[in-house]
Amino acid sequence: MMPEQNAEELQVAYLGLGSNMGNKLLNVKQAIELINDLPSTNVIARAHLYRSDPWGFKQQEWFVNTVIAVLTRLTPLQLLKEIKAIEKQLGRKPASVRWGPRVIDIDILLFGQKVIDTPELKVPHQYLTERLFFLKPLMDIAPAVTLPTTAEPLSAYAEELSDQQYLVLLEE
Image (cartoon, rainbow, N blue to C red; front, side, top):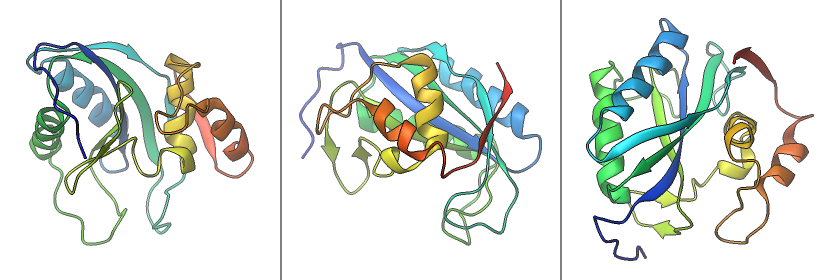
């Protein structure tokens, strides 16, 4: 169930970005610029850029990943609609394989301390605590952030995964 949100209320949202097709670094950087151009939305922090192995479907290129923090007046569903339009604008096509290759992928990881469970959107992201390529960059920009559902620090999840998943710094 999603609580109603006043469209005037400023919220901090954390978005995960990834690319493993074409110019991966450029794809991620262009997506960040387009997100910053959204109405009532400003990028306020960007984590380092990381190289990660694919998650889920393994037979594909490595990814460039990062996390950004945005300050927005958009509702969670408005933000989702806007980032899906950016994915399409940058050339993302419907996947033939779940978790397969993509020009750009943008996920809402957290939206304030909201818990959202609708058919269109789940926040916190349903795989947030299982993906180091979300957690490590998130720790770069929000080291004290907690999971809204349990109030546990997300840094504990990142520590657990650091020996199990490949992630290397590409660019600060």
